[in-house]
Length: 279
Image (cartoon, rainbow, N blue to C red; front, side, top):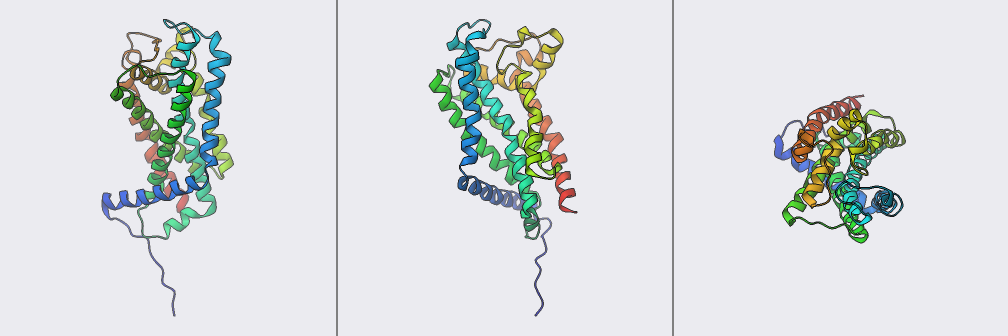
């Protein structure tokens, strides 16, 4: 008796691709639930940043127009939220690198499923994980005195912007995870974005920077997202360069950055995936 080989199905339309993507999303989320230490250790670092900057460094940092430790903690939290989202790209890069190492992606290729499902499923699952860790960070912020002074809709818009950034970062993580040979390298490669969080207004206002550096910091997508969230949460939000596009319209510029990241990194990640699975 001869063996039966199932060939991958090509085509099927957008509905078919979305259904397969959601199936892989469910598979990845179940894997996360079975390893809760991923969420635990993912939340510990930003909580440490909240405590360090609130009670160790915060007393020495003045926010223009809002002096005092209490206002600094409200200034700080949007930066911590965005930093948490940025570092979330490492979950994607490490997860994909591990799937490639273990041959799980090769098993997916042998199934009659959309080829795009592996990447979309990973990005959606990691965005959901980002949403969960944001909930943990909200609780941590409330404990140190952070408050929302705007409407519910404005607050939801702020968190929606953070999740859009998280989804875009997942595609950068996918590109990194598919470009390296193992998960340890993927984790190290993701840290190259660490300086981006400090070349911004996340922890200190940009007004004290040299003019040339402040211009770079004000256009930093991390800065525009943080400024937009502060405005939407009603928190202290000193603008580095009033009268400029990122200074006056940070939410609009942030959406532009999200679209640009997706336009650049989705095709790059898909190309890397095809190259990696065709070897």
